[in-house]
Length: 353
Image (cartoon, rainbow, N blue to C red; front, side):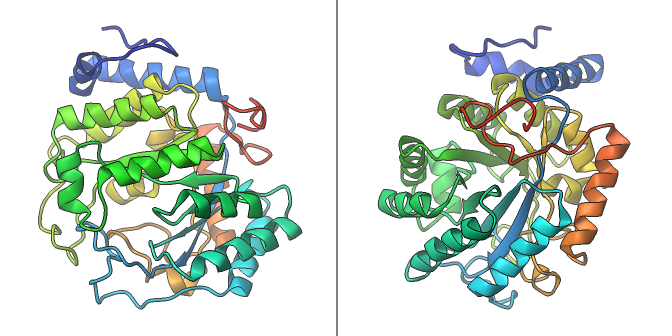
C-alpha cells in the first residue's frame, strides 16, 4: 500500500479512506512512514509549548465540553494579570518550554483589552518567549490588536468539518463563522493552528477523512487533534467515542495527518494520555512532534477539566517539566531549543523545530 502524498497538490477523500482502515502489518508500516516523514521535515528535537489555562469562564454551551456555560460543576475562575505573569515566570524558570500557550473558555468582551495588556507585559519581560493564544472566535480587529501587542500564534480548532455535526454540537456559532476566523488569522500573518476531535458522536469515517483534508487545505502551521472523551457532566456524556471499539483509529488519524501535512507542527495532545497511559509517547512515534505540558497553577487545574481523566492535574509546572524531559529521554528525543516557530516561515528553522 502506498502511503506517500505530494507535499503540494490535490489529495482526495478516496486517497485517505483506505489508510484509515489499515490493520496489522500495513498499520505498522503506516506508523513507520509517518514517523519517517516527521523526522525528515521536523527533525528529532521536540518543541515544548506550556499551557496556562488562565480562565474557565465561557459563554458557549458546546455539548461535549466540561466548562460549558451551563455546567455548574467547575468553580469559575479568571487569573489576574499578575497571576498570569507569575505563571509565565515559572514556565521560563523551568527552562524547558520555548512557547507559552494562554488558553481559556470563550468569553469575549471587556477582558479582550486585558489580554492585549497581558501580551505586552509578557513580551516586555520575556521577548524571546513565543506566545500562543487560544480563546475562541473573535473579530479580525481583535486578532490584529492582539498581534500588535505580542501574540505570535493562535490556536482555534474547528472540531469537525461537517456543518450539520458542528451545528448540533456548537449552538453558539456556525462552522462558517469558525472557518472565517481562521481565514482572518492567516490573512493577518499570524501563525495559525487548527484541528479537530477524533470520534465525536455522529462522526463517520468520511467526516474524519474530510477533517484531515481540511487541515491540508488550510495548510496550518500547527494542527492539534485528539480523541473525543465523553464527559458525564455534559449532554452527550453517555455517548461513546465513534471509534471506542477501534482506538487504533486515533493513531491512524495522527499518522495520516502527518503524511498529508508534512511540515506542520503536530502536538501529542493530552487527550491521548487520558485514553492510553502512554498515549502521548505513542503519538510522538506515529507522526506528532510537539509536547504541550500543563503549566496552570496547581489549585486551578481541577477546575479546567474539559473531560474526565485529564492527566497532570495534581502537579506543578516544575514537576511537569521534569516529567516531559524524562519521557523524551526514554524516546531518545531531545528537547528543542528556541520558540519552535512555524516550519513554513522565515522565523522557523530545522534546529528549533
